[in-house]
Image (cartoon, rainbow, N blue to C red; front, side, top):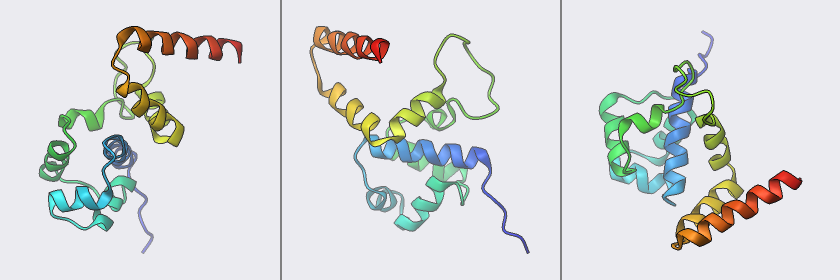
Length: 130
């Protein structure tokens, strides 16, 4: 019997779980302990190889401190809300890279709004010249 490949929505939701877990600097083991599973099961959820039931997704959302809808934002096949707004896929791809996650974590720690705006302007200027 041929092995079925993961559904794109399961992979997307799993990727969002992984992205949020990493943004909180939480290990797979810590998440697994919080929901009563093994870290291997969390790995399978994050890869999309195993599907999550609604109650499990609610548990994960609670531990990761996000609404359940967070995991579906920008999912494939969803109607686009705005043609001018950047795709949530762009944000997901950015945060799934080590540099993107590190930059986001550091930026969040900057408390002064003027300094944050200056950082944004600096990065935009650098990007325009690249």
